Image 1 (tube, rainbow, N blue to C red):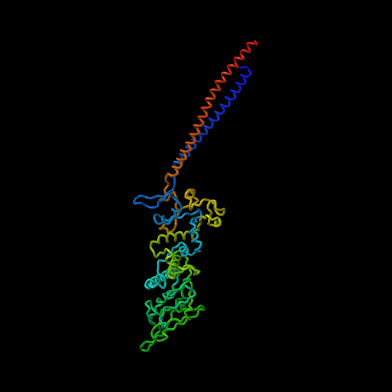
Image 2 (tube, one colour):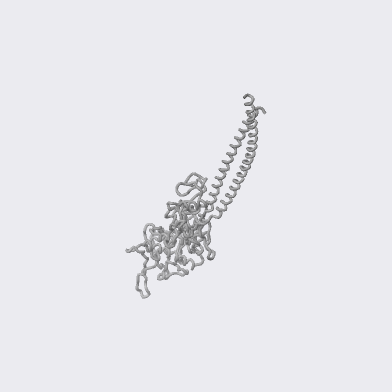
Length: 490
């Protein structure tokens, strides 16, 4: 081999050795990065082994407590309220988070609790009979219950209408009905018998109508009490006495007394008003005038009874009240749901509310937020109403808070996921299994990459040994050539 060729070959081998060593170093760095990734994956896996989730007590199977993964629908649903306790979820301002359905029912009710219930298919009326039913005893019992319910409300605002004044209150301003009378125009009692002037009982009047609940506009005496009709009775011995009837003195719209004909035909029976007289009757609406929650509850209950009895539910008179359309308090099985909705309504009324919608046009900056990806109005995020992970994260970071209804305090009281005895934090087996699957897959991928790098290193080592051997051989030739040249020219 000539001197020049040998030196060129030696330079080529040297370059290849350098490239080989650089490649080996690069692979060594890659193996180090794999080692770092292995450590990171291991750390993540170890952290995942500590993953926990929130579960909530949902009841008992004998002596064993049943816990279920926490979610908004589970926590705030009626089954939880029935079996454990009633929870609500609020934001940091105390506003209650409700479903779209409840939010819509509340908005359409416009402050009317009975309408709120009706919008959800419920009624707090615990009667099932309506005016005009063939079951006269049931009708009379219902009317008595209505009468007593209004009396309880009136007592809370210091009003006493007397027995007669609102025994005949109707549910209409445009009164057109007549009292129950026979063919002679005599008043009839509840059994349909003519009532004598000494036995007149206003509770025997019929009570059918529609519209707003109201009571008779009547004359007041000097003490502010209802004045009643009187007449002069002639006794068999010819003596006369003043008799007061159980009939209030009614006023027309001008405030004038509507006259009452008393036994005009002398047969001892009470004559009825004429249709003309009845058309003049004025009924004052029963508006809410209380200031306490007790008063409000009594008013709403009395109004619910009246609505159920007279079969109307809306102020505009357009929607008939059909008892079969509602789950009412007449069925004891509905008591739990009625209490459930009552508590929610009162919370919304006192603290406000908010909800989420999947329709961007409905979102606003007040109390309706958009779900993630559906719009820009309000707070755009995944809805905790339906996304359980979002709900749990919100409870953990405090952006959503829990309250439960205390029967002792008769209100909702605050609680936390760490203090509430019905909530427990347990190992999240699903998350752990998922993390383990990911760990195994990631480790397998890294091991395969490591094996591939080992093969490349082995290949480089073999190539390096061959190059090194060739380098030593060529270098030996070059050295001998150099030595021979020195001897020749020495």
